[in-house]
Image (cartoon, rainbow, N blue to C red; front, side):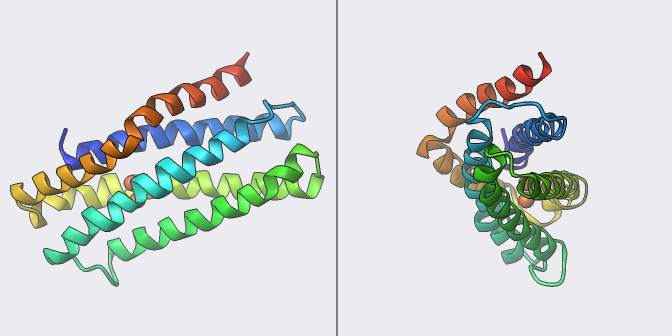
Length: 183
Ligand SMILES: [Fe+2]
Ligand SMILES: [Fe+2]
């Protein structure tokens, strides 16, 4: 799998995470109980997989190489994507702050949780679309075959640091969240 395909593969798992969050929001809004650790598990998934693994791979490896090869980092698509990564991290921190109060059924905290969660889902879906429709298709005009190979190797090193084992576990956890809420 080349580097761009592996980022798209990450996006599919992140989208499962967004779906799980949406399902939890719908259930909470309808006054239904959700599994007590589902929200904590979801936050763990998004902070480790989306923020620390996927977004950092993009920023430190792909975007870095693209800017070395002449794609503007400031004033262009890369700057927008990086600022969206930062915005998404701030939203996750805000969502995480509300979780203990959501469990205590605090109405104001639930309202904040729902608003921030829906903003997060919207931000990430549009971010993924920009990457896949606008930025990834341009990478071939900046990167050489050797660049692609080096980027893949750098991603593989991050994979070796344990993300593969976590990935399978998270797929099951996210599936569990969605499945349990559907039945
Ligand atoms: Fe991104
Ligand atoms: Fe991405």
